[in-house]
Image (tube, rainbow, N blue to C red; front, top):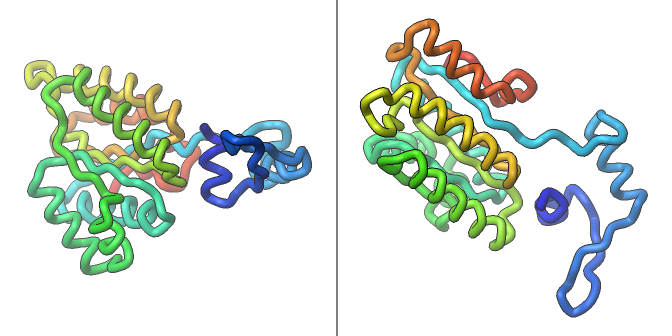
Length: 213
């Protein structure tokens, strides 16, 4: 799956072989890709399951719009999970500051949704969406989600959300999805904020991750 994504995005040359058009690679091209990763002998790390804590609604919308715009401008498929009013506000940021990304969103490469009422249903939604986008040849997959709006199960919602985040992290790694989970820092205690960051350890090695926005 990673090889398919790298060839679709132009990072790795390939030849097509046989009636099924299967991919074949030069050893030299594979080694060159590994050298560019900065870690000889290892493939580049997966994009990551990232987190940002916001303290204003404008910061949430600006951060989500910038993250999604980057994926849209790269030709990727982007998913955005949040309440309908948040979708509207983020699209307004895209229209104002990233007109090319706004046009890409109109083409169907930005898929807004609200969180499902259960973690299992939400994970099923993601798996179906990622599978479809991958089969369609999307060169990049991105997800932005407003975690503070994902009150799965309502009662005891925080522990439910953390359990969901762990399962989502494993799923997103299977599809090489870059994910930014946004949380309202004003709604979290210090202990809760620490626990949120612990389930997003990829942010420590990725420039898109941030503690506060």
